[in-house]
Each structure stands twice: as C-alpha cells, then as structure tokens.
Image 1 (tube, rainbow, N blue to C red):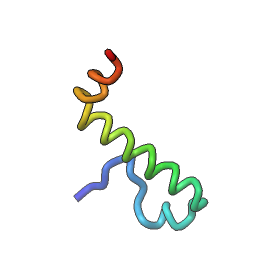
Image 2: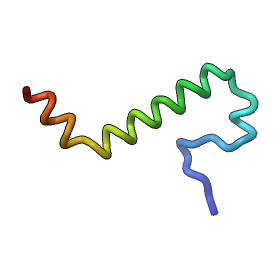
Image 3: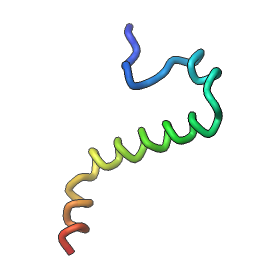
Image 4: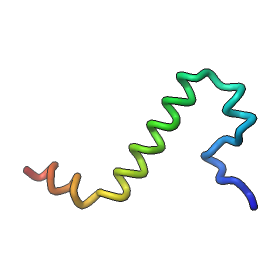
Length: 47
C-alpha cells in the first residue's frame, strides 16, 4: 500500500523540526476541515 505523496512517512517526521511537523499537521487539518465544511464557510463569508 503506497503512502500519499503529501504525507511524509515516520522516518521523515523524525528528521524534521518539531515546529515544522506541527505546522504541517495544522495545515493539513485546516485544509481538510475547509474542504469538509466549505458550505458553512461560504455562508459565513456572505454575511
């Protein structure tokens, strides 16, 4: 099973700076939530 290209494997995470790991995780979560709740964000933007 191939890993997704935008998600580093465990070895890459260990070599990265903890702040960079945290930032990547936050970016992934925000992007995922924006995609999941786009209709809600669109309604808020229209107000």
